[in-house]
Image (cartoon, rainbow, N blue to C red; front, side):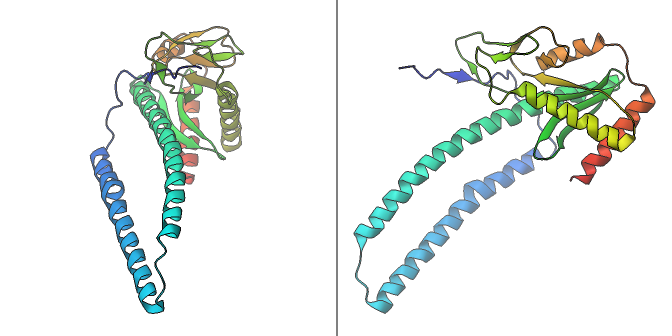
Length: 256
């Protein structure tokens, strides 16, 4: 029987705080820690009061066995649901922190003339980040996986096969990021009337990434992105970069 391995977040540092984050945290505390608790208490007290009045009105007998059975079933189902929810919450929090960390790193590239966009919503999917500059247009998908505590795991990519610590992610992030780049290429073509190639990039924050044959897709640690960009020849004029950024920002605003 395999022992459950301990894992840790690959992120060494927490993301920087966002504008209004303290207010968001206070709102979440009020809503989820206090409001829902008291709402549940009020509804439960009203339900029991109504039940007692109904018994008084109908002279109905007490039936503790039935209510005990109902409570038992609800408790078991509720615990199973809460365990599943907790797992989803942990994964979502890890993914959110990874996207924030990568996004904040990409924002620094504005100083080098890049235009940076986050969370572009498509048809039942989203692109985590898009950067536009003289080197071209790039979609960036962030994958934040927890890492084993006592190992030195590696992300490997040979141009076709991707493995994360020896395992193939399912569904394939390579297929996902290629589809995102194709969608954005089509969107920009329809919007601008011009054809602009889009390079798909897949990043794994906090992981050591070993990649080769990255003709179609870049698979990187996000901190290696700037070095890869610097080696590329310029493919966009300032005018075309501004044109793409304008049309993409107009699309984003239309989806808000």
